[in-house]
Image (cartoon, rainbow, N blue to C red; front, side):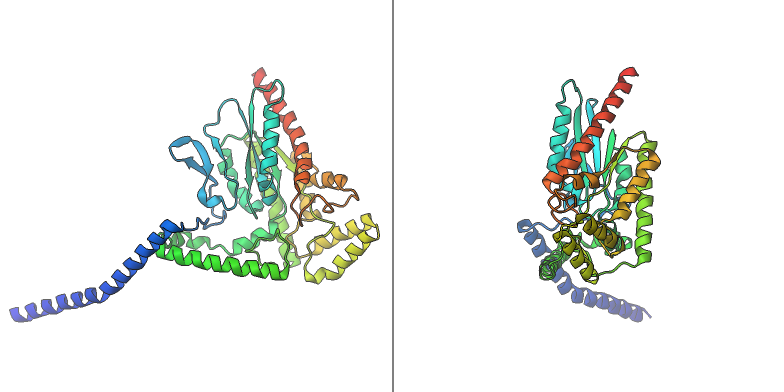
Length: 392
């Protein structure tokens, strides 16, 4: 009996030893690969990726800046979508803090916004320092802007500016590429340098492939490389997305107003001179161009408006702008008519002839025109707020 037990133990130990020795080469191989990958990252740092692309509810744009714990700075993974900037928390008593929300149009306004904030701060008799924090995210639509609201409220805003309406269709395509249920698994997996190296190699190859494809197809420059530009939204999908856009704007505006934070909203300028239309609307695009070339600007512009409303588009249309006007009326908001400002500044009254660089992005001059109207409203609201504080 004793011999049988001893023999059984020897067999059991021998089995474990065999398994261990069999796995040892694999463990050594993996350790070597992981070590090489970590050494490679010393030479070429890994990509910093925003795994949830801002669709996850715990997504935050800013974080404490190292030892300067009273300073907030743009998170590394968010710098692919947002401007690198910083501000103090808690907010200094002499600071009037403004947040501007939107997509790439707002993102690209960063330098003009700095000019506006400096001009406001240097107004004769003004004792406050005006800062404008740029919350314009590349390809961000109202869905992701809505997610940012609790974070923004934590930074003690005095005023909110809203210029958003171009990314409602592009954003829904981006969301389809994100699997929020797998975020924790992704984060755990990419703690390994070897997997990060494979991921970065794949991303680099995919970027080259998609960029080449975009150049070959001559797609519009504002369409993000991850967008499935060939996808055609149905009438039902368009209606659903516009309902969500209205709901998101309602939430954003009402939430800030409930916290006694005023909001200024603007309609968005869209290119009616040369609208970005799919191949299915090629005849309409040719007709619009003929009307403009013949000097029939009003007719051509109206035709462009009608086609954009019906098109399967990334580009904003009258639908988005009318929703913006409805929201402004509902909450009695100061309304900047960004679309009309650009129309009035164009030589032939058609937005996009000179003041938009593509389907939706304003040129520098276009930005200055829209921001000058925002500045007028900011001055009025800031002056009224100052008087109330003095009376108290």
